[in-house]
Image (cartoon, rainbow, N blue to C red; front, side, top):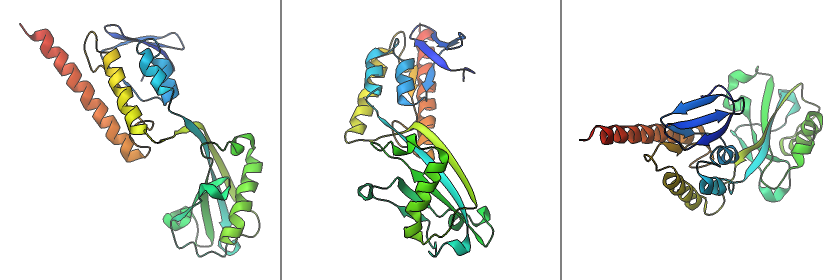
Length: 234
């Protein structure tokens, strides 16, 4: 971590990172875990072809609306983990987790906590709504599905703008092309010093991101060990 926003990466030896605050950090290797658009900006000078490919990865803005109700306000038994809403339904809500059914310690016995996910690629309606409007819209959508009466006693809205990478058909091939291009553009003076990891590439979930982080660390260690062997060779 540079302790600030990274603005530029120069493929010199050592690698030189310049933050937007003007701090300069020299590094033997760099693991880029920023979202694809930020990674593209970071690599624009050191790996311009890779940056162009990274910009092809699109993102959606999403939000989570957490609502707390009295158990008596909801007719549904909530005897499941939650529900998924098909895109063809045209709703703002894409899914709803019956959070207090999954994690009973989240609420008292006479309370219910619901967590609704909102927003998908191509649907930016939620972005233009303020928190009050979004809460009302989600409550109105869930009411006929779950038999909700009245208003929530508690609520929280959490937003992530342009945060959810989209895996369209051919994504795996695009990622392979990005990684191949990056390896080619940053091969000098030694290969494998710049690697990518994160939700934009090989899985969105926490386990997938942990696996990518471990693979990235292993790749960097192997690259540095290889460089050390080359330098020590007679």
